[in-house]
Length: 461
Picture 1: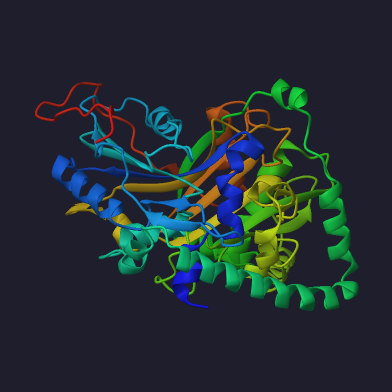
Picture 2: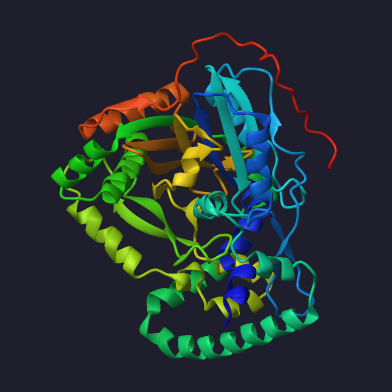
């Protein structure tokens, strides 16, 4: 099967995220945030916007013309009217970032992603918000890193609807569904747990609308902290673990602090399935759930956590996103597909997204070097507790000699932003780690910056 067919067609994770607003009452948004100590110019921001608009972020899903074919990513243009550069200085970074991520980015819109900047502390704050159904975090990193859009010719060729291309995909999907389903049915009796999971999923009924409407969406609080990367690794080794197992244990502790009465803590670990930058899949990931003991927060050996993570990751892959073979899943009615998608990040207690070392392209815009950089994923307008189990989310990004840690938490567990920040600082101190705020405190009052033209988002261009 050609790479074009695999990467230009929506996979089960794409489809699940595309329907998240309808199924869960909220959409997942990925936000990258930078602070530059030196001001950025409109030209630098415009160049970044144009670069992103030529790449993998500016595409949408086209319905197939042939029954049985998967939907296809097709190139389009972002209708945000260029980067928005405000003349009004940011007073409170967290509030400003929340304001940017709250702006709607729905499947119906032709505003595909949003790039906004504003002056702060003598420099510039920048926010890039991308709906998760359009790309995962690593896909956004690739979009920023590509000198030229990967597989541009392939995506351009997909711009026009093609009966021939859809027919070819329908044949491939149908053939793969037949072969994989026969093999799966032959092996299914040897895995009764899998059959039980399918039966339970098919019996599951969504909550009644009246019950869903009783709960208002919860917009998560956020904490942005930096930790010395060498100290982080040293503490991981001292506790018989790795940088990632320490991160996962910290994520589990965030739930243990807030809900000590449960039996287990389910940590969702996003696993990137890309093998090269030429993989243009929008969401090339599967969320691997790892169950850790609940109870009081733990600060001991990480060996068992490390073993559980390794075993879960080794057993996971492209086959892990659905309860039945993926080609068969695509051919099922939408109502059945929703039930037979394996529980994703939203159905774990906490997600631990380790993005690893930040690509060099993330550290600069034009000739300006970033003084701070963080990434977070958020439910917008907020998480509806009755529809999703997620209560906290952590993102780790290594930038130079620092680990940038973003923690978000539901207000039901973490009363306010200050309380969440204190808890995260105390949690890191429990591992012998000292944290500092990522963003500098503003040293000047809010004022309009002379010479900068304010863009107002209005009609489509």
